[in-house]
Image (cartoon, helix red, strand yellow):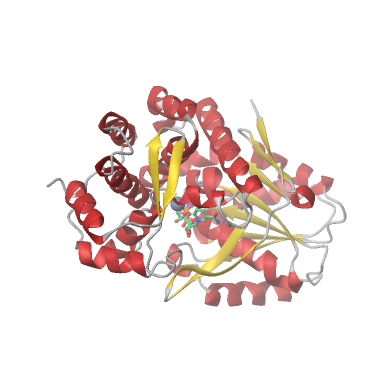
Length: 365
Ligand SMILES: NC(=O)c1ccc[n+]([C@@H]2O[C@H](COP(=O)([O-])OP(=O)(O)OC[C@H]3O[C@@H](n4cnc5c(N)ncnc54)[C@H](O)[C@@H]3O)[C@@H](O)[C@H]2O)c1
Ligand SMILES: [Zn+2]
């Protein structure tokens, strides 16, 4: 089975293909691109070990030399200094990298963001192809063209919009993911469902056992449905002037909680799951969202193995983090609030007392 989603961005349009076993066909795709002089595969150490050889085999049929440039796995390595090391390796390749070279990213969102940033900036921009290997990267990070790295002052503060030439997703790669990483991606799927699609929410309810077991057919459907939602939003608002902000549902609380517990102590998706519960609480307190719909979203999250309660983070610290979020303007904290499944509003008048009430709810008080 295979699914294709078009990302409609005029001259920058591309396709996202989802198919079990697709990793073997990466060579065919690269061969179909105009004039590829050389290929550099950016992969983190763990993914390079798991799938590097298969990808290199697939690239053997390409009429251009291919090299691996690995970097150490982990969000803590999503930095300019890792990029520096990768640039050193990239510019040492023979034949030298040129404007017709292609970067292939093989890995999770960290790899896609770093490899995409390398492609956006090397020689003022070369092409790149995304081969995501985590569910989070498959359903979210690999489509949309946001690339970049973290800075001590915050996540994703350095970066560029740079669209890939394609995204090839092989759901078989997800079988080696640890359960926490799988659930992390499922949280972003719940996000897409709440902001855009009743059908997707129902799919997550009906097929949760298959999804948690990484059933190929269910995963292929899930990934394609999510990519279609993300592609639709990105096509309408590529650089986040308006609509694209709805993708931040769950992320205002989520980022603050993630930073508070310390990156690496909680997956991003788990923090977003808690963030969605927090945002829903604000929405029910405002009378925008029915309690039964909020309860339904919590049940879906719990059914997928995500926690919906957490030890009480200090509301003042969380509020402070929200005020300093890069998306906060003039002290007005933005929050995406659902009115129902598939219907959200963007508000910029969140108050400290609403945050306090939501956190009390999250801590089970
Ligand atoms: N660009 C965007 O639009 C966008 C959107 C969402 C998230 N992101 C970024 O994505 C990052 C998070 O992505 P992530 O959760 O994929 O993290 P990640 O890339 O760090 O991957 C998580 C872990 O899984 C391992 N891994 C990857 N694929 C595997 C596989 N198939 N089998 C076994 N292990 C595997 C990795 O080595 C890593 O240790 C964050 O930095 C976030 O900012 C970007
Ligand atoms: Zn996210």
